Image (tube, rainbow, N blue to C red; front, top):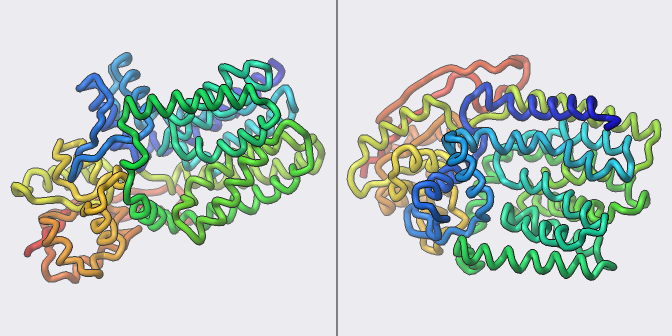
Length: 473
């Protein structure tokens, strides 16, 4: 292959950027990691996909099952723990996106395909979201059904497109309208895709009890996530809109064969703008979708000096931001030291009492201690019942307990509030010190140095501490 050596270098760059924070911190970078490896562990131990997720109260498990099956199957085949696989699999697969983009685009525009591969490797919105979601697997797969249909293999292409639902809801939902637009004259491709979707929905219902009416309280979780990301989301959104807006306008009247990616990028663009007014648009998701759209739209523009200059500017800025994110800003949600605080809370928790922590920390508490019913928030907060205490716990963490906090803690039977460095920086939890009914039960401090001392410090840099606060009725 003409560009094989160049492509290999690009993939290595992508791998280094995505694996750097994993190697530096040696903990899962993903916010959702404990939910994913916890489910995989349940599949391994029970030999089936759990239909009910236990935490605070029983809830139906409606999460797409393929990633958890992949973690469980890989763990059984390799003997590697699911927690390590959750740390490694997604960034490794995300590092292969340049390969997927190049193979899908090279017949249309070989030079453009190589530029697209490089942008896929270094663009910050794609690098910083390489850890959290099986959407990264869907990103790698998505070009395949489009390529197969283009080459006349409509059956397998349509079925693969429908199977995206089994990996990730959001990427599937954002892709439906663009797929219909791109295939509007190909009724067979649409029919096969519809068949794939129906089969996937049936499998979701059979395997995961995923009925739509089982899902409640979506907004509480989205507001909490947006609150946590507020320091980074505006910068990422601004940069993404700046570059993607130019690419979208530039490619609007260009080469045919990119109808899917033009519609996909436009819908994501509108979704990101909408997220400034309504959290349900999930701006943090739209940013990475726009990054993906940018990669493919670049190849729709005929090669020229202007495109080369633009690609150099975009690639350089993307690489610089990605290096800073990879080596300094990207962080694991807990450190090895934080596990000591988890152990203290678990060992000193009274019967029928509860622990309040942010959802990822709660997930680690459940995983390390097995006490799933002793936490008040969870990474599964999007599927809580209407009367669940979880939304109240998320609000308490966001407002530092200013809105009737003591009453909530008392009514919810809370004994401990479990905090780490992210809580202090992202949510201002030092305010708890002014509450006369809260005292410090446990504390462990440590220091983490970050390489770029002249840049703003990340949550995980400097003097850090994990602590357990005790609520006294």
